[in-house]
Image (cartoon, rainbow, N blue to C red; front, side, top):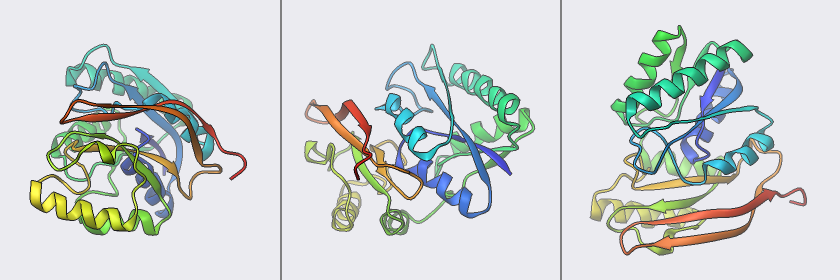
Amino acid sequence: MKLACLFSGGKDSTYAIHLAQKQGHDVVCLLSVFPKSEESHLLHHPNLRWTKLQSESMKIPQLTTSSNSDDTDDELIAMENLLQNAKDQFQIDGLVHGGIKSKFQKEKFETLCLKLNLVSIAPLWETDPKKYMNELLDSDFNFMMVTVSSDGLDERWLGKLISKSDIEILNNLSNKFGFNLNFEGGEAETFVIDCPLFSNPIKINQFTKNWDGYRGRFEIVDAELNYNA
């Protein structure tokens, strides 16, 4: 099937493309909705503007739009318009997304697809958190944490490229503090720097870190594709 991917630049949506391709699907475009603010319950916010580099590196065209409100219904209208554009431009048959456990998100996306006569595909649905995190690294996905907002996660994680040993530490912290190891509940968000889908990795030239004592953000200020890697 020809698919669009709801794309945030994080590990889940990027790995969903990887799995969809392994299943024989053709992911023909990326769909990114810029939320009004970080208060959105449906959409990923940090560093979204740098998804254009990931799109370029994967050689998959990207369609973008912005939501004027954090209200879920308004965000879904923006998403519906974007999906319709993808249908018109790329003749897609369905939508792939990186949902793992959020029934709220999955049901919203499925309803939207039903309305537009599209198939909804969630290849990561209900994967085991620890197995999944290790699978990402085994598949050569290189990703960093760009936000943290949970007990047990401090500013040291901001901008950190995740390794196998980090997954063990995060697993222990998730058991102790009760957050999801795969960050499905928004306890942290990620950004993929390199993976087998990329022709070139992303090089971050400049960034800022913001930490308020509980939550923090790693903001990419300047980045480019690294053609020398």
